[in-house]
Length: 504
Image 1: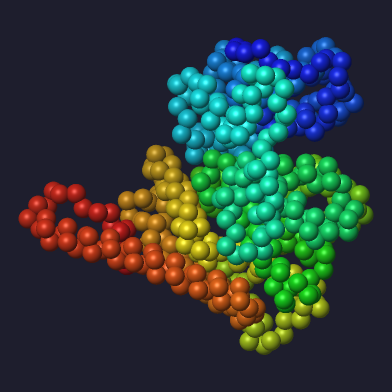
Image 2: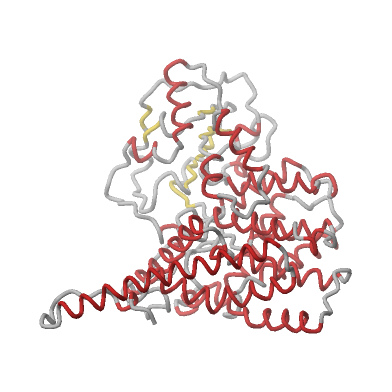
C-alpha cells in the first residue's frame, strides 16, 4: 500500500466517534479486543465499502477520504479478480476475503462481477479510485489535503438544502428520484425511507432506536447490488416513493394502521434486496442453490424476504418488541414481498377483480387491508411505465440493459437465452410495449377501479402516452426496415436491422 500524501489523522489519544468509524469509505486500524468502547471490531469490519485491519496494539487511526489520499497498487501478492475497493476487508494473516451477503458463484461466474466492466489486468489509477466519489466529496478531500482544516462534510450546504426541498415534495408523482439520488450522494434509499419514518411518526410510535434504524437502512442500501443497471438501491427508493404516494390515497390513508404503514414502507425498501441481476429461470437452469432451497418457487422473492429478516435481526431494530410481535411482523413482511412475484400476477389480479366485482373489500378487516397493501406494492414495483416520459424512458433502458446482460451471460456459457434477453431479437420499444399491454395496463386499470382518484387517472394517462411513444419508435424502426429492404432487394448480403425492431 502506497500513501501518496501526508494523511490528516486524528490524535491517537482522542476518542473516535462510533458514527465516524461506521462511515462508508473509511479505513480503520483497530485492535482485536476493543475499540474505544465500541462493539467487537470484527463486526465493524463487516461494512461494505470499508477496509479494516486488525492488529494487536490498542491504537486507532481514522482516515476519512479514501479516493484522493490513497492509491492501492498492491494489497497482497495474491491477485484480486474482481473490482477493487468494493467488497474487501483486510485482516492480519488472512489475505483477501469477499464481503457480499447472500451472493454465491454459479457456473464459475460471481454475482459480484456480473455487471462489472472492470479490466483485472489494468492497474488501479488515481482516476479510477477518485471517480467513485462525487465531485463534492472529492472537492472536500482536496481542500483537506491543501489546508487540513476543511470540515468533514459529505455534501455541501447547497446540495443538502436541495435534497431537503425535494423531500417536501415526496408525495408528487413527478418526483425525480434520479436527481434526488445525485443530491444525496447515492444515499436516496436511506434518506427517503428515514424521512418517511419520521413523517409518519413511526420512530416514536414503535419506540425505534434511531441508531439501529439508521444502521438497518444503511445495510439494506448496501446489500443492493450497485452493479445492477435496474435492480439496485435506486429502484428500491423509487418503489418506496411510489408506495408513499399510494399510502396517501384517501381509501388507504383513512384506514391503514401504523403497523400497516410500517410494513408497507419496509416491504417497498427491501422487496428486491440482494437481487443478483438475473431472473428466476436463470437460477433454475443453472442449478443455483437458492433454486433448490426454495424448490423453484418464488426463488428471488423468498431470498429478498429472508435477506430482509436477516438484516432486521442483525440490526436489532425490533429486538425491544415481544418475540411474538416480531415474528408476526416478519411473516407479514414476507407476505408483502412474495406478492411481487411477477409469475403470480394473474393469481393476485383475479382475486382483486373478484373483490371489486363483489364490492366486498372492507378496510376495517385486517386481512383485506393487507391484501390492498400487497396490490399497492405490486403497483409500485412496476409503476415505471406510468411515470412521466423523462423518467419512464430511463427506467425502460435500465431494465432492458439488465435483460440483455443476462442474455450475454447465457450465450457465453452456451445456455438457452431467456425470453426478452436476446439483444439481437428484442428492442427496448418492443419489450416495453408488450410489458405495458399485458402486465401494466390490466393491473393499473383494476387499481383505478379500486381507487378512482386524480393520481390513478394521471398514471393511466402517462401509461397511454408512454405506450404511444414506444409504439411510435417501433413504427419508425419498422418503416426504416421496409425502406432498407426495398433498397437492398438485390443485395442479399447487406446488413439488416435486428428482428426485434419490427413491430409484432
